[in-house]
Image (cartoon, rainbow, N blue to C red; front, side, top):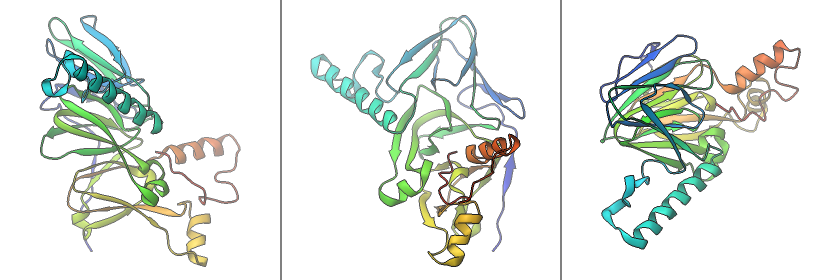
Length: 285
């Protein structure tokens, strides 16, 4: 069964949001804002800005920030109450997901402004362009920044699939029009399951992002037999693999937080995986 894998190491300037990805081992995004243009990021991803760019921290994401008017055009106490409830729901979702409760918003006030963002691990960054036809889903640590025209949401994977998928239990969903900037560890690999018979199996910690239309799932590595236990205990993969099915773009990363932590632990003289190998791995990525 054939297929194609494309490795991308550099990203060109985006179409909607004027930005440039710079650096190699630890990339960062340098964003140029037009007067009045706004970009938001997750708290902790901001690096620098020019003095004509204002910074505001809010609890709400752009989907219910409202810009002074509640969604749907409804004013008065009812509109304010709905907006407050929407903000509280989003804050609660992010708290349950273990994410930062706040977003930081940057707006250029006069002339062109510049803002810099970066991820938290050595690796690549990518600018995704949303045209309103397809949403993008990203693992919960991948999001860096986005235009204010892009809506942010939390998508929980239900039941056993989500819980056994570790970080796959929580996915961040991006809809609307504009640019979303994501980051991952190591190098990115782009592929489409349709090129490999419609389905691929992936280490759960390697999934960074995928387009709407791709079906995400989790399957056990073999059965609860001798070989299945050998895979889990000594193969370093735990009991589960992520499955990605369909026709669409998938972005994987070559490094996970767990593998980086194991390498650092080994360098400090600790045991790489312990006596149980990857049996109880969560593959946090």
